[in-house]
Structures are given as structure tokens and as C-alpha cells.
Length: 325
Ligand code: CP
Image (tube, rainbow, N blue to C red; front, side, top):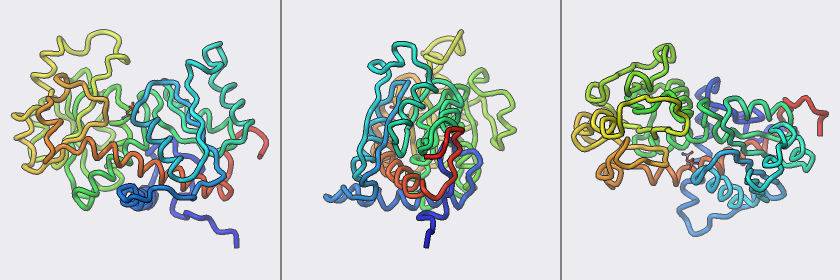
């Protein structure tokens, strides 16, 4: 019988969290939970992706995402190729689509893509026959980051539903914030966006969140404080007077954290700007900060996503405009 291996997640790709339903998110998190446990055991390697090929195609810098996708694929027995754009023909002017079509001709099973433009991963998904994972596209989405954040919270609190989560800082430029808003909303948590007015997107309330421009108000009694990196590289013009001012009003320090619940989790997707959006004192608080656990869960989540997409590949419709493989 030709049954789909993971029937609760039937998409060919993972391009974003928007549009996923609770059963799909839960399927990914439950599978990741198995890998989270296995990754803490001495025997971390298996054969779920034996014979499969994963290509990491990163047009933007990355430490956590690229390394953890590579590690995840290795641990599942896949072959992994890492394309660094600086040493590829992109540096000679080859377009994103030509690069993707070229890689597609080598018959990979999964393409992991990070790109500075929103929608880049979705565009590639239409040009290749393999599964595509969005590893971050512009300020649009970073779905595996939201999944690993959710797994971290669920392991610590036993649930997502009913939690009050403050996402703080440079929301405007943050794909992490967007993916987290969609995931937390669909899983029944309540999201507050906290930051200076110029760094909160206009119309944010339409996403089903509450907005606070005063961090002391926004952190009151929350279960989770999720800090965001100030993304200077995406800013044109001045969004705040100075780093010193920013830290004073919107940097997470011991005094502001005291307004959250006494056991509130401290999260940050990394890389951190210490002394800008977060004080080292709270970032390194081993009782409250789960920042290192987020990195650990990143490997487990990426193992789950790679495995599920690869296993379902022959049971899902290609979205490609190319001829079928
Ligand atoms: N959180 C995150 O995406 O980190 P990297 O940019 O290091 O991959």
C-alpha cells in the first residue's frame, strides 16, 4: 500500500509558518521531541535519510541555522552539500533562479535556502522538483526558528496554549518575529509586540497581537520574554537616537525582567548584541535563560523537518513548473 509516511504534514515544502494548522505544527514538534531526546544520548546517528541529498544554499551569513541543518542531515545519514555563495557562480552574476535550476539538475532531495529577499524560497520552490526549506527570507519568515522556539517553550512549560509571550525589539525587520507570531497564534498562545514605535510594523494589531511601546508595560506578567536582535544591516536611516538610549528603554536587564512572571523564560534567536538589546547578566542567567537550549532544539527541529519532507517527497505534488522528475 502506498501510504504517506507522515500523514499529519502533507506539504511538499516548509516555506513559512503562516497557513499551517495546529496538527501540522504538532506533528513537526512531536517528531523533533524524539530527536531532542536522542541527541542527548551517545548514539545520535541513524539512517532515516540514507541515500538522500541535502543542499544548503545560503545567500546570507549564518552560524546557527546553516550548521544545525548540516548536522541534522548528517545525523540522519544524508549526504550534505554546503554551497557558499562567495565561492559559487552567483559571484559571477548567475541569478537565483539559474542557480536553483542548475542545482535541481543534480537531483537533490531537499534544498535549504536563506536569502535576503522575502519570497525567495517560495520562488525557488516553483523552479525545482525537490523539497524546499526556507531558512530565512528577508524580513518575511524563518519557520524553523519559530519551531525550535516553540519546542523550547513546550519542553519548559509543557504547553504553548494560554501562555503570554512578549516579542521585544526590532519587530519591523524580523522574520523570526513574523514566524513566531503565526506559530504562537495558531497554537493558542497570546503574543505582545514590544518596541519603539518606528520598529513595530504599522497595522501589527491586525496580526492578532497586542502592541506596547513601553517595555515596562509590555513585560508585565508575561511567561516568555523573547528578545530580538537589532538588525542594523536592514536599517536605512535612524530608527532610534543611540544604542545607549535603546538599551535604556528597550534593552532587557534585571530591572525590566522583574516585571515579568518570576519564572519567565528569557529567549533570543541569536546572534545577540550584548549591551544593546540584552544585558549579559540576564542572557547568561542559567536559571531563566534558555538561549543555549534554543540552539540545541534547532538541531532536533531541523532533523524532524528534513526527515518528514524527504519521507513524504514521493507522496506530495511537485509545485514546480519544470517537468516532473
Ligand atoms: N537565529 C539564526 O537564524 O541565527 P543564524 O543567523 O546564525 O543562522
